[in-house]
Image (cartoon, rainbow, N blue to C red; front, top):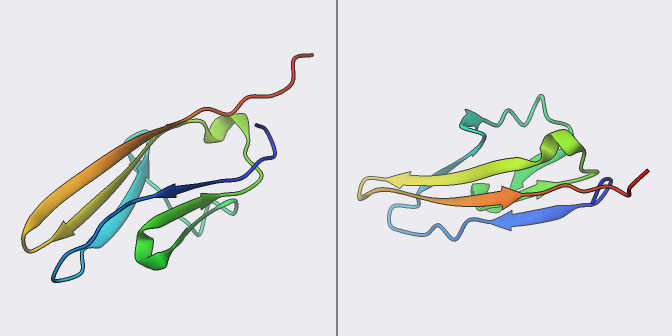
Length: 83
C-alpha cells in the first residue's frame, strides 16, 4: 500500500560468505540515491519504507561466492486507495 513498508529476505548462505546484490527491474539499486530503501543483515534483507507507486516492480537478490551464483526474484505491487 502507498506509504507502507515491507521487507524482502534473501536466504543466502555459504562458505565463504556470499556477496549479495539487489536489483529492481534489472538495474542495480543505489542505496545512497534511494532514501526509502536500505539493505541490512549483510545484504540478505531489503527494507522498503514509505512505498510509492514507482517502487513497484521486480526485485532480484543475487548471491555470489567462489562456489557460484544464485538468485531469487520478488514481485512487489504497490496499491493505493481509489479516487
